[in-house]
Image (cartoon, rainbow, N blue to C red; front, side):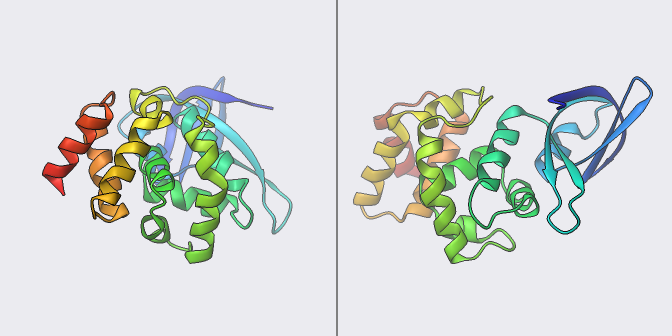
Length: 198
């Protein structure tokens, strides 16, 4: 099984990439997230996940710019009723960080805003993925933000802000912005900064 391919980008569209390595062109389906990461580059490394097309049994290779995005794809496709196309739609509609924050904040409306995701599917995603994400179940997560998301600070700050009367989606959005600027924020810092934004 191929884990990743490093090579020259010979074709790139918002849904597909072709990497050339040793004279062979490898075509992979990609998300908008990976497209953005590869745009304006001549070479790149793509992490691969092979999926079987349920319609005809053929293999489809999905490619990802980071291991963390691939890990999220694997987590999403592991949820009942979520196929590869739906997982790619999720990862095209929001970044890996946004998706994880939406799951941790139980932001059903944010998840439901993805085309093809209804209320029951959004609830199932939260139910099945929240523990895995909060316990650091995403392989390859290497940014400070992911390490922060893994600890209690985000959850404690979010709960405190919700108890103060703010709604969860607005809190999740504020917390995300705070962590983008200062990933290692403490609970008090997150709450103080969020209060100024909400």
